[in-house]
Length: 226
Image (cartoon, rainbow, N blue to C red; front, side, top):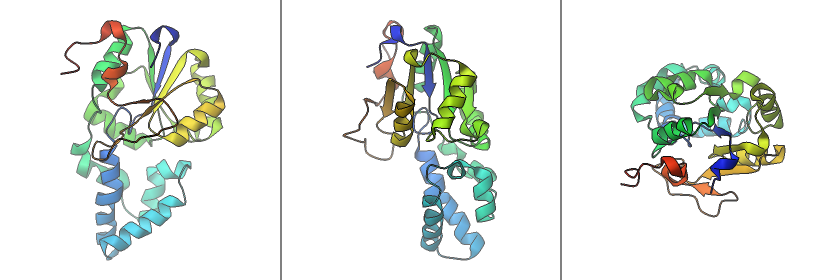
C-alpha cells in the first residue's frame, strides 16, 4: 500500500488517525451537551440540538476546531472540561510501534492537525506523542484549516518537503480531497477513526485499519499481529 523506498516524509493527522476519535465524539456529543444543559438550565436533547446546529454552521472552517470560539459561544471553559473525560484518550492500534519504526527507517514524521493547541497539549500530556514525532503543526498556526488550499501552501513553504515523496494519512475525506487537489499523490484514509463505530466501506481513497498493516517491512515486529 505504501512503497516506503519512495517516501521521505509522513504527514499524520492526530484525532481519528493516531488517536481514537471516540474521545472527541464522546466529548462533543455526550459530555459537552450535559454540561451545556446544566449551565443553561435546559434538557440534554435541547442542548444537543442547539450545539449541533451551531456546529453545522462552522463545518470545515477554522472556528469548528477552535476551543476559544466554542468557549465564547457556550459560556463554558471548553479546554478545562475536556480534562473531565481525558481518560478516554487512547491510541489507535499499533501507533507507537509505527512511529518508532518510521524513526528507525529515517522517515520524517509530522503531525498536521486541525486541533486547537489546547487540545494538542491535552493529548500530548496523556500520550507523549510529541516525543514520538519530529514536529506537530496545528492549522491554527497558519490560520487556515486543512480543508483549505492555503493550509497546504503554508505547510509546504514551512516544511519544504518533496510532495512527490510525501504521504498523508488522515481520517477526513474532506481533508484528503483538499490534499489531492493541492497535488499530493500518496494519500491514505483511516477506515475506522472511532473504535466504537463500524469501519467505513467504499471510500474513495486507499484505506488502512491497523498501522501494523503498513509498517515498513524490515521493521515489522512479529508480535504486532498477535
